[in-house]
Image (cartoon, protein in one colour):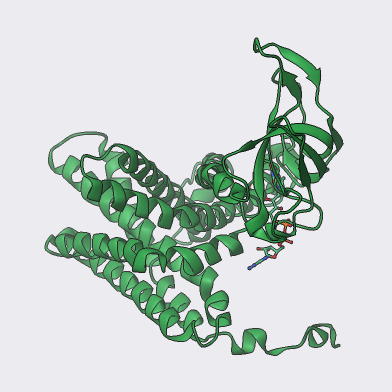
Length: 438
Ligand SMILES: Cc1cc2nc3c(=O)[nH]c(=O)nc-3n(C[C@H](O)[C@H](O)[C@H](O)COP(=O)(O)OP(=O)(O)OC[C@H]3O[C@@H](n4cnc5c(N)ncnc54)[C@H](O)[C@@H]3O)c2cc1C
């Protein structure tokens, strides 16, 4: 995907790359793209670049962007590779992480390309791929969190330091494993709650993608499509924010050995960091959620989400084992509703109120969405235990981890709502000069 240029990242209206018609249906593409993942490599015979560019008379804004297919090698009529196109890799970026991926500056010098879709509708066409990629990046964050967490669990078992606060747990040794320390447990339990909850959310999102295509009725297909659209910035933004937290906490479990390269933990932190930045930085995901997704179709998607959470909480509250958790989750859903109402009441008069609270809102929604996943997992685990199916240790751990999520994550929803309701006044009050004032 070739979107980014030196002067334009988030704001694609600033694109300068030009596409001039050659008169034979093809275009001549000229411009410089930066940060292009796998822009150049020899893993495949050909590379097909999807390039955003502007045609000569296009409006000078996001409304004037078209999408082009630009192959590294032109393809002959019989499908064989032809001459090399006039595009080249200017340099490979030196990065903080994901070193296995060549991130390239790409120069297009009158390269031959073909338009995809309609003129000036390129951004919408690109978004088909970007929406899928955003879900992919959410899963990338999950994957990095998970491997970092798994390493931390093993290290907490192997490494012995100090004694348990309640007295020696392993008197045969001079020290107990790290596992005995509540603060180490905090990091491990948080990691377990996020990784398993986020995995659930990614799978629920994937199910909605399938239902959007293949559900029996138009109504079901539409609701699934609405939910995918609503959840995409949450899976990407909340998922990668929390995924990064898990990776740094997993590194923290290793103490100094996590900072030294030998153990490999710092790589997970470096690799996880990019997931919060590319495919639309997480602040931009939050703006997509509150600025576009909430209001779409008269709020149909968020209303459907509220209704799902409310219905499942109401059903679970009748079961004594889940009444507490369902009550907490229902309250968090109430915080989300209140924050939504607050935006509606205060966003029109001052849009900065929405911008100032967007990131907090995305996190409340992440908490509610993961809370829903934990409610479902806990209910399924209890059912399996009652029926004598599956591994008891695994299922009991699910119940305890759900409780941890209820105790340590769900309460944050109330604090985040209060931050949203603080508005934007103090946030926006200082002049840029005042930031520099000593
Ligand atoms: C390793 C790597 C691989 C990449 N791969 C690709 C690729 O394959 N193809 C490609 O086209 N691009 C790629 N990118 C570019 C990436 O998508 C952009 O870096 C990213 O979208 C942010 O753009 P920017 O860096 O210009 O930051 P800017 O747009 O300058 O943003 C800077 C900060 O300001 C915030 N911000 C900006 N505008 C707003 C706004 N309107 N509201 C709120 N906050 C705002 C952002 O959230 C961010 O925190 C890659 C980048 C990296 C580092």
